[in-house]
Amino acid sequence: MAEAPDIQKEENTDGTIEKMMQMKPFRHFDSHGHAGLEKEGIADRPGCIDFWCGNSVVARTMMGARAMLGDPNPFSVITKAEECPELSAAVFVKSMDEANIEGMCLQSIHGVTDPFPGYPDGWKWYVPNEYTKKAFIDAYPGRFTAVGGVHARYGAEAAVEMVISAHECGFPGIKFHTATAGYPNQKEMYPAYEKLVELGMHAQFHTGCEELPGTRTKYQNPEHLDDVGMDFPDLKILQLHCGIFNNMEMGLWNVMKHENMYTDIVIPVPTLMRFRQYFDMEHIRFLEFFMPDKVFYGTDYPMTLPFYKAMLDNIMLMPISQEFKHKLTGDNFRKFVNWESKE
Ligand SMILES: [Zn+2]
Image 1: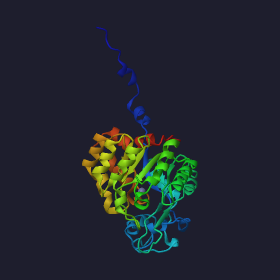
Image 2 (image 1 turned 120 degrees about the horizontal axis):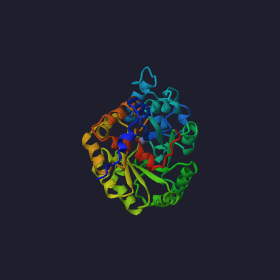
Image 3 (image 1 turned 180 degrees about the horizontal axis):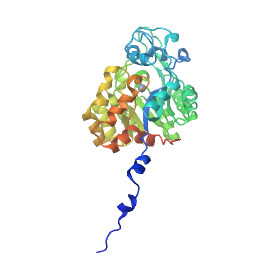
Image 4 (image 1 turned 90 degrees about the horizontal axis):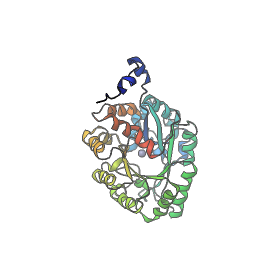
């Protein structure tokens, strides 16, 4: 019997030092951050100031970020734009560099809630696509991508226009913020979904809970997303937050049932909600076993600014396979949006 060629030997000609020098640290990708809360011009972006100002759940959640950004009295209630911390796009990049994160997908938001006491026209949250493009994507090439805000509060035609706006900004997809904008399976949104399929764009939907003013929990149940998955099999859908604190089982089921549905481990804002998805080994192992190619790492930055690097370090130290860690914290999302590294 002929001896097999000793390939192993040939490949192993380098010494230990040379091999170590070839190792590059894995570059992660953050699938979910929020533009708009930067100090400059914050009062011109409806709703953004409410993240920092007033005595609300979300403003209290942001006190850790205020401390990190140099506020000497981060537990005080602030009320004015001038009092907002010095957050800027440069701060995003600094945090990303420290955590070895190559890129971040930013959420441009368009949302109007149902009317509620004190807000007869609903609470508005608006981070224009053009703002995200100019302040982040164009200012830091190779570090950011984004999705554009879409809702149908102003009718089906306006929703299609919002999709076109996101496309014109070069974004790979859109975000529908159910918490403000209503049920994702409302028929007024269907022409917008058709447009997305036509343009080869994906759709991101908030699921789970949300404590922003005027938001209603019923809209955020992942059960309603099943209809969109059924009716638009060619639309790639990212189910944000996997229905946490609302209907996580259904969130997981959606991804298992629908070929076109993906999810993430992003926790919505309040600090108390942070624990489940990042630190629950049972949950992470379930994802690794059932949907290793369909789940993304994201952070809701700057909400998570105080522990941005620690969150990622925790995942990288978990007893899960190295292959899944790389898929989860970078490669899955890069593939999802056809990201081209500029590095
Ligand atoms: Zn978010």
